[in-house]
Length: 85
Image 1 (cartoon, rainbow, N blue to C red):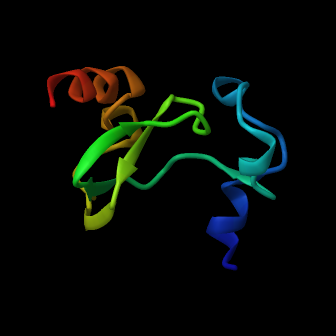
Image 2: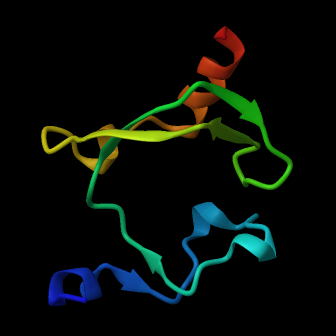
């Protein structure tokens, strides 16, 4: 692991992930710094994921070097998209 990646790691859970299922807790948390575009067949309800939603058959479309993490789609926006499908 390179030095830049190491600086993004933390063993402290971020406040916004207070309700993470024990089965999903990672060994380390990372600070967001990379934005990716994901395509999926649809958005489904999930009793496991903290947001209550999951992407069905997700796949990486591209890395978004033109976007910052603050410009990424929010959970609120994904919930709105779920209602529109």
